Image (cartoon, rainbow over all chains, first blue to last red; front, top):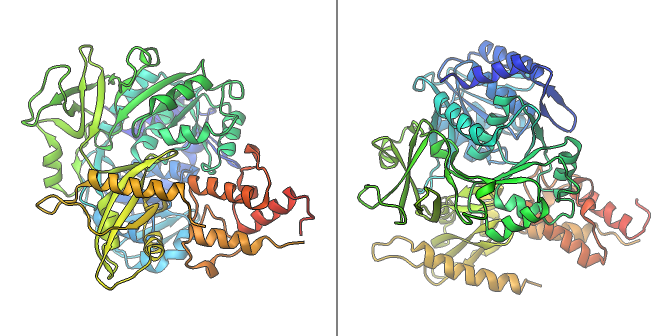
Length: 503
Length: 86
């Protein structure tokens, strides 16, 4: 299978006049995307970029992000994108972990963090209108064929770098396209961050077929998203459950106001049936595709086609073409239909491993099978039903947040003796992170100060929504936090607080 | 004419900055760009303005031009209350 950038180049040659990336004040055709990414590639080469080096993209969804992505791959580099709202400490951790050679970011971010970048070990920084040499750096090469490292919250608190090859990305794009049948006349508003696997797959599937990607910066304003969809005659919408819950609060999110919308997809966590019914009610003629996936599987694993939504209600669908799926028991052996177990998948979509973490890779990839950590069963017709997730990740508004990462941060405060974090149900975001702390005797740090500390050290989507004082954190006899029990306790406290707000 | 700025600022500092660093927040700073607000935050902000000032905010008014800084919020409240915008 070819390289991702070659596939995009083919689109550029085939559909030069077609719109590729449009925003509020900038509209690029595929020919312009080719030109801009070519310029960027040249600038990266001049600044000293070499094959196999990792380039950090610290950018929001933007024209620059798309051009930088194509340019880095064009130089046989590896894209490592970090969320634009990440704090500098989080970005520096990623730079160090991946031994990045360069960062591509905005002038504003450079000016604010120049000193930190100068000490980070990077070779250079590439800004929209200039580049800055920073040092000799580490020119160690990544494995052959590697295209991208997607960071995902690990269960141990420190994020893990999921290594995806060109083949992984291209295979998964082809699997998705086999089901979604996108064409150059399609257009999608990119509300999902490109830096995570779902947004990344939305970006690539549209770039592969010559469709239009609409950049909308005001994602938190439903009215702005809807105006963009209307103005650009969006044909598709991809979102996590909370995106749909959010848009449905606006009266304009219905087929009468958006007649061009013909398909929708959801992934990144369960889509509640009641919410799905409301979306289908608002768009009776549009098709809805429920999907299930995982970063380690590049993106998509299964899809439930629109025509099966009623017959197989609650299912995540069948594997997309090119992927085999089995349910395994605790010994790692396949079980018959109807029996619950761990979901395992095989195919060209399976990651190459975690960046520099052989132990975690070996635990996840066994004999060509990726053990997802999710639990479920398949019925006699091969439809997957997900019954639970083994991992303790909190899924909030489509983001995956590690409870351990927040716990470690809270424990940095001298007054905190113990900290436990769990997800509690939230109407809009599905789940939100809530923390419980036990203070050392005689100490009195306020909950507000603890939240303020989290606010200054964590990206907005990772911050706990509330912190409660507890007399103890529930633990197993060997000291492990009993996350479910903790979640129930925190949920009860949180519900009381929501119903009886301060003041 | 009442100035809404202190009350709006207090709400934002208390709810989105958790009471800290308020003096560094200018009236013209974008709440989005500063990473202070998320989707729940916007709904909280809308509810605060509606309740506190007895005004109704329509869907199409929930846009950054009306809500994304203290200054924009104050002007929007003045406009909704039919006061001359200063």
